[in-house]
Length: 433
Image 1 (cartoon, rainbow, N blue to C red):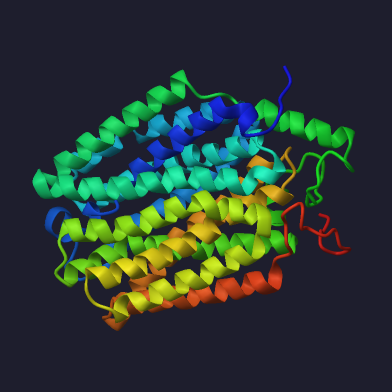
Image 2: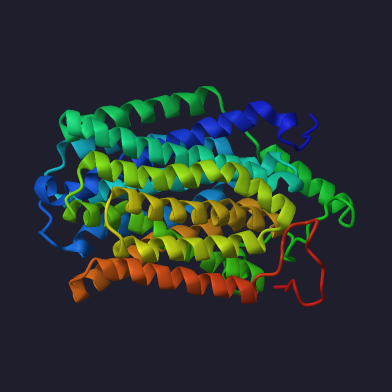
């Protein structure tokens, strides 16, 4: 069989992957609006303890980060489809735990399972897309992928807010979550094309004609690098990989803030679950929707400067949030942060795909996604401790704004343009192990 890359050439697997990432977004989104607001009344969290509420995001980030690393490596041996199915099997108990949980510790346990699910399933949709597309389509494809995923996150947050306001909150989350996970598992088993052969075919083409197989400037590494070598390469040995890894880590501070701190902040201001759902939903919808054009934009303009602009937009939106009042003003701030995330999120993934060799791209993406989702834990823990120590939730917003601005500056100084048509092979740009 001939494995020809391209979106048009592989429409069926492309849409299968989009359906899967939409289900993944719905699964994580079911916890975005309702759970943080009910932490004290339903699950016994001590009133005013922001760090305790952030605990379930910390557990999620630690586990998802680790599972990104594991799933990327495993998928290069057993295939993308099998890892995807394992991820959905792990998710089956989550709605039941939410329904019967007697304490916040059970919610943290559910988020451990959610982290495994996300690390396996979302990672596989990204990796599988990288397998089947052309280098010139990476921004477009990752933008569409993340649009489907974060559109699902936003939709689930909004729908569960309405359901929890009209019916019993726990029952609503159970029914919604069980239906989504069951449909996702069925789709993964019945209709998901294995794409690992595409990656192996691309690696073979490059090996046969390294000068002409691709315009990409792959980072040099051993022919069959070990897990430790790939971790070292992405984390500190290559300057561009390192800049991308830190950027991925810090950008998750914004999502952790929108997941927990914004609902808590708005609830303290007297906002209803529906109003909170709309504010966080606008963030998700702008983030998701704008990725349809921001990913493609990076295919034309390059990866570096759209990403930097995204970090600055996030810093502005998050920093302004506690300085304004009213649902319209909060919604505008959320939209600005969402636009910033749309500019940076698919572009960072595409940049990783530009310079990671196809034979170990899944592993490199796994390491990047490890550091990226570890940002949930680092950001959530830092924001919780800062808010509790200062007695001010607003400090969490300003900490995040400063971190995003500093990370953007790191990209300016440390990232070499990676997009094939614009990348310049310069001596010293790529380091050997």
